[in-house]
Image (cartoon, rainbow, N blue to C red; front, side, top):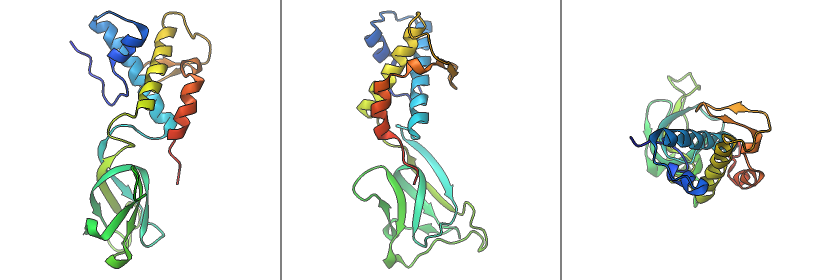
Length: 199
């Protein structure tokens, strides 16, 4: 039975190629998948973003600025923008910023639109604005992120066989233990370029 990876940045075959693992044993594949999953989620936590597309609706307080809404995550595409009064704002009435690159971090209501952010029920500003769309840094894994995932998984898998045994262990949500030595210094160096700035 094939192992299914969910939102991971490398494949089991990638780890097998690097470690020159020839087995097609499903239990072994499951172990490799756990390391890849743990490495992928570590990258998410370290950079503060995800490198796969997620279809979600996010809610925002009415901003203090009358036209600009700062987003809490990377936005790839906007499906529906709903104002606090429940009115859907047409795409012709706003721009996504930055204009020429992706992902987007802000929604700017055009001055010509004569639209402002409104309160929910006329009195509540909390979580009044909703943004439905596709979220994430990218819909496909960037090559440096894939390389980082493989490097981390390789180190963690190597420790299973007696390598990289020093350091303080940390258990991830995937149930795999990662230690500081599982994270090569070079990986952190180029992942630093992907860390999401808090605006």
